[in-house]
Image (cartoon, rainbow, N blue to C red; front, side, top):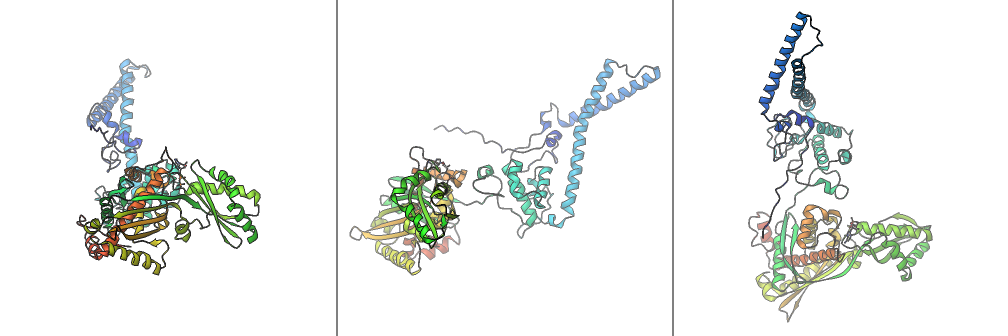
Length: 583
Ligand code: ADP
């Protein structure tokens, strides 16, 4: 196939007018040392080299000046009126003015700039020890901020592209400009991040070397993903797969810094694939939000509970609720009580969005609606923790939240032996004693598994999910049973509260979006809204199934500590690895 590529565009550069006018390469032309292409200068447009142009204007200026002075002396001697000028004198005057303007533009502005620059550098570079120290931390050598030979790949002071930026940085440091207003005041998110970062370094005296600034689209996170950015953290993304799930192959992106995790999940995928694949079923799709409302008596709170849970009122309430979005569909209302306080757990499907915003809007609609029939209802909070978001809670484990998925596979006897290096009986016994009995002894809540959260977190980070929702999304019970006369292994993971979306939040960012695209679930599904996020939930469960298989096999075979010591201490060769550290 003939693939045509557009040449990469050079990154946009800011340059100030005076830089362009001057055309000097010493201090003014070098706007940004890190730019891959030289900064264009006004002098580039001249037909002659700069030094020749300067020579021409110098010569012109002095020769016409000499000529005019000569003519002036002659006129005085001959008593000719000065205002009577010939054509050649007019031409000389015009040339004098033109060459004067050129020379003033060239030397005058530079003089003013260098004067200002020297004054401001003297103000904080040399005299102020606080500013002298701002680049220094325990690991970096002391670097004078004004040095142009800094070995720092992302030098701090060199990143300042203008005196204007330097002034803004100073105003952030001395708190006259609030850091959070930089984006709106400058209208340039990258510049705002750069200035904030620089101000932070000066304020703390600590270097941010190692935290990249370049290579990120700061506009894409504005008002949605992160406030007051100063850079971004890099997390490697590994690929496990193919995961054969419901007849399709998926290559699962996992963002992690834990050695062995991807390799182990990959081994689980291999075992599933060699056994004919896994099957998943989506049991439920309903995000929840539960406000807390208070009444004057438990009796009144009970009145509202009965009203909300009466099936006859459901249609009216869903019409009100569903106004929040064309994708929100109320599924149910379930109330909890504590005396006079009522906790109303609304659950609704949310299309391809994870849905917290959507469901919250719907809840607000219903609360507003209820206020007319229950004027004594005091809304204490839109979230009363009966939801329950980002906290371990039995309600999510029992009732579900987001997507509830069960995923299963039958792993053949020879695959258990050859790929997983163990046997069915050992796996079944380990699963009972560790994941079921062991977790019961520990008083686990939803933690009847070996390491579901390892896989959930890695896939969540790669695909732009909310990592804090790993808490409930990792609820999982892993079951193992010998089948087919005890030869093969039936393994399943049941995960009642996987909270994922393919639109909104971090899913639209470039890297995360690429990972969603790899799985074929990027963005909104136009034909069948909600299919993308539901598919993503089943892939998460499938990857957890692979991870459970592999880790339990490693423990059953007694390989865990050996491989941990080998690959988490010196990760040179992961080709033979099959298991990982358990958290
Ligand atoms: P969340 O509710 O997960 O926080 P947002 O409300 O930020 O997500 O994002 C959902 C937005 O995406 C809504 O404005 C919704 O109208 C829009 N949207 C577009 N297509 C879809 C889809 N297929 N499913 C869900 N939301 C969609």
